[in-house]
Image (cartoon, rainbow, N blue to C red; front, side, top):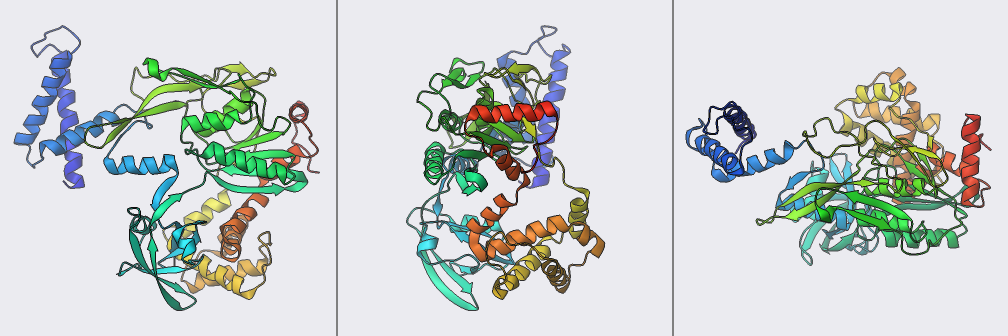
Length: 534
């Protein structure tokens, strides 16, 4: 069924149900003025509308198509962005995300000059064992030319059944190399970045909460402490969450036995639960800062909320997303599933941080919208509703005007921009002028990138380019670091130049115990001025 027909079917069904329901409520059906429609009457009405559409609509649609559309429409009309009907393919992708695993060859790719290009092979993957390197261009896959493929097309083609093979033709330095790779189980780590910054400040970025996140975090923090870290920054920015159980398990690493992590409440008994830490925390004397922003959601907010309510960490950044609900995935007979919101969750202090959804259907679970106030273990005031509000609000909440003007000037020519960026970065790397990932983007580099853009026929006003210097330096520096030092080098650069991370490091300087960190923040808030740079 075409998209136009699908839309038409949905409109016809919706309109018929609305009109039919109105007539019945007005007493024009057999029930008269009895009020509520019974389950049998509702089923009869729906079946009558569906059969009339199937038999008499000007176009044609099968019962299977209509039932599928009606099922999807029912879920959409709940107005809950976290409830969804999952086709077998969508269910498979969800399982890959929450497990952090898939079957493929293990490489991250992007488009460069119209070709799929390797950003990095995953450690221990078939790609790494085959000798694939960052910058390799994928020319053919199983005999098919890959020119102008999208990243999604390449990703889907590289994945497949365990033990199956894929034949690649790659290009490196003008030479073409044929390779045959056998697909295997690939695990995507939750912990994406780890380093020790100034003054023995450990840093770990958690990208998601999959089924092994707690083990990864425990091993990572152990390694940082053994390497000399005396404080810890946990970066949860742009972490969309994942498994609630893993959010609980990670929070437990930093809490004492008996301390509540989160509780859930719903209409059915199985949706009601309270989760508490059961084991002694592993690093009780480690001062902690947690970073959040609007991209921090779900299980990531559980961790931030638990550590904030128990005064175990200072939270800094921007207010988080506010996904304070939990979903159950219910398998259906045809291999599809229903992902259904069945509970709201609450922080240890009793906060719901679920933000209001304008399209939520009437009568569904309420959310905190009035910012009620709560107390942490130390008596600090925190608020509910609309996400986790940081103890120190830092970072830009909007794209600067100069950067917006630059993005508008590039417009739809993003692929040309990326081609120019990749080509220019390769020239800089070949020149040998960059020696480590923390290099400074010079005016000469900026001018060189400007010339490369013009050579690629990407012209924008020079004053807009100059005004967006900070944004230009950021993307040019990141691309050069990626090509010169790989993903690890690019990540190191991003962390070292991040102003919010830099503030966290200053906040932790000289702090020997968690209590001292809270005293420092309280003093800074009392003075109503940012912590001075040392």
